[in-house]
Length: 71
Image (cartoon, rainbow, N blue to C red; front, top):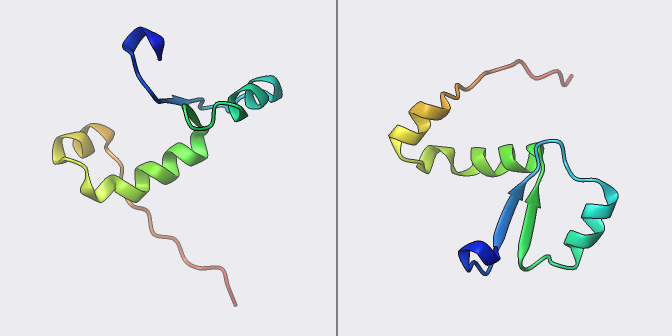
């Protein structure tokens, strides 16, 4: 953050973070946000339809329909 004079940062830790890092990051909640793979995908899917077509083409996501298993 200091290298870019940023007030906030987003760390995407695909595999999550260990307990030591999680504890340290908890103290910096308003400065640094951490997303694991699930949080990243949730956020991406929430805005996917609003992304520029060029970005969507690079991501190359396709919807998949599955049958509901409920009785």
